[in-house]
Length: 436
Image (cartoon, rainbow, N blue to C red; front, side):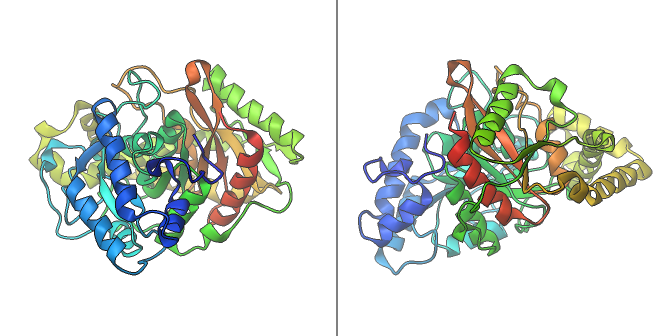
């Protein structure tokens, strides 16, 4: 599975990265309709096993592609099929948020990100499966490497669809680890920009202080391209850093919970980067940062309870027991405890510069190990959640394969609002850390 370099022209159209799709259409080598049809054919062949899509209208997608083929180039995503996590509003498709409460729900307008993607020429292929309200109760999606294992969550359908070449790129959201964890379990790129970088207008909010919109892709350049369209940061124009970046190896306070596969993934990547000439230093996370997991859980419960107040008071019987327990915890949490958690997070963010030191990025574990067996759980979000509450940009790269070929990603962490440098470092690391 290609995840850094461009695909070759001989590859099936559904396996091409977004950048080559736009180039091929612009050069007249193939059409948007042909690309869309190839993606739909892959879905037709694999959806029965994977269950990645909550809604799909093949005829509408093909009609959009034909419309694009008949006119001038619309923008940097002209003809690129995109999957949309089913927590974003779409005016022409149901937005059901993984909940029976919203069966058949039709918003009046697109979410900001969806409208922006359409304006850039994207073909919105459909809505991908999400865990209930982007939480922990899983949907129907299975792992593309092993259908008996979870794909991760809550951006489960987006990750599985991208990994299985049903679509080159897809949108996800992360409140704890909902972009990076499924990306790691499915062996693709998951990029969570800095908090607030991408508009959340039209998104069903889970936790206001944590929710971040991000991207799932099979290449770093595609993740940068999609993020650039949504933010205007100029990320797609950047290459890898010119010189070997300074990378801090930060095992975090959760290292004792890492399984052998994650230890091998992190230590193996560190060894290869040292051999490639990267100044790689040990970075100890100060003891105070061990409070992050508890603080995130407090904020998540308190804010989720308020975000689902309507559903709780009017449709309680349609809420899963798992989410109900979090909502009850949130309503029982004193305001003082919530503000205390918010303050802890703010104080620790203020100490990030000192922890980073001279390093351009940090190398950290992403997940405890390979995707767990069974579909009842989406996996442990702790390794991703501690960085989510810090509002920093993070990316997972699929550098390791465990026994049976199951992927395990590493996590690179950047400074707040320094998304451009993180992606440049990620390109350098990707070229030298190897694929799993």
